[in-house]
Image 1: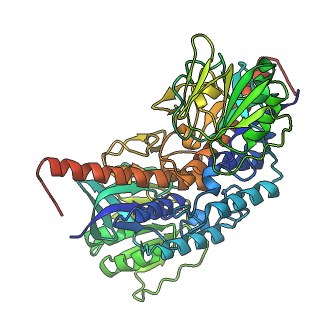
Image 2 (image 1 turned 30 degrees about the horizontal axis):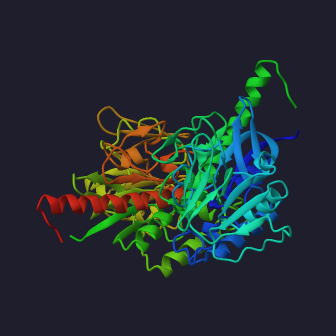
Image 3 (image 1 turned 135 degrees about the vertical axis):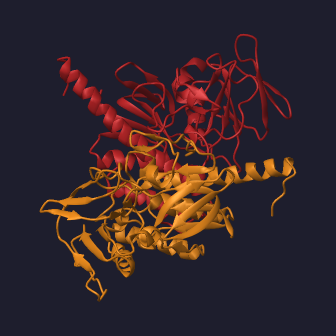
Length: 299
Length: 299
């Protein structure tokens, strides 16, 4: 498996900034996110305080970012990252059911909008999942619900329906879902999820209207919380704990932007992304020197 | 004397960003620096990694900043700040011999390029000065040297020559000085200053060619070091010590950009300026609430 120098998770201002600086420093990078930048960026009506770009709309800023990524030849991997595992000297990133390896990781995935559902944390891994592509095989012949926050969740539901007996799809966005699955296994439900219950395993998804007996609940948010994404990551006041160099408690793992704390501001995120990239570059250099000194030379 | 909400020192990316955000938050601000942004910005050939502005020249970035300041109605006070004094509940800023008051201060003055001269720190206040406009009166009928790092220092030398008997002007830039003083009191010397010596007071300025007997040496850099600017400010590894909210050890005093540490990067500075401004805004709110609670209501 190819090992990237730096995997960057998120394409908001923090992730884009980190990618640009890492690329300018000639690193082999893997950037996960949407080519359209983050939803928070491209939905912003007008940004008043981004230095250098007076009164720019979020859409224009996203276009500028995309243009810059294109100019530097930076590709965006439009896959949902569901977990990052620190393996000691490298990281494994699980995205849309695939595995990637990187020597360092920059978390720039933003903050989860809204609260978790009652029962979500308690039943995580026991019926609650954040990746349909990863766990669909566990639901062969079973019933599952999908709470989808973006249209990308529709594709994951369709994949799930190939294996499951029944899929309840609860869109959390206004647009009409375009489910093309033809077997009728997917039922679209316009109700508000309220809680997930069960003794050892998920049993019931409760909405504002009624209860659904299910074996699993997939919650497909635009981003998942950092502590769920990276086991062992130190959190403080709901954000990833970082220092001024954007280092987390895990060596080789950096965080920047909203995920690393308030204020939630575009240029603050961009600035921290830049710092995270340079810290990752320095970290890679130190790692290489240490390996050389200990005689373990890798290409 | 009018008291400003926030005094911002520096017009590089950090200072400009702080000014923009403070202004958007309706604060009454005082911005010190050059309308052309910092020298480091407008002299940059090409900036590769400023997110949103692909391959922009420093001059273009400076123009964009200026446009944005103009749009928001932010004036730049083109005066050299020589000292900031923390008075407890407010700050006094000394600039080009004038005094200003502000409830909070954001330091964004960049880093001093190059080392201090041997003897500079030891003789500071005993013949070594950073402000000719402030201290010229002490040199009536005496001899002083001016080490000028920018063309603005020429004007200060001329003012000094109105009082002093003799002024040696040592330009540290390539351009030819345009001294219009007609009495011949100013002598331009193209030599490299190497040390300042003296027992209790400055006695000699030593260059690479010879020694000059002087009563004082004015060192007029583009910016002076933060610890010299703000007495009592905590410094760590040569930079102002800040936390992630850009707070220094002095309540109400914030720092951002190069002055607050490495990496020296434009977008990192802009991001920190944004954070410093919001921290100052929060600080002002807390101060007002505390005053209201203690019954001391000020306008």
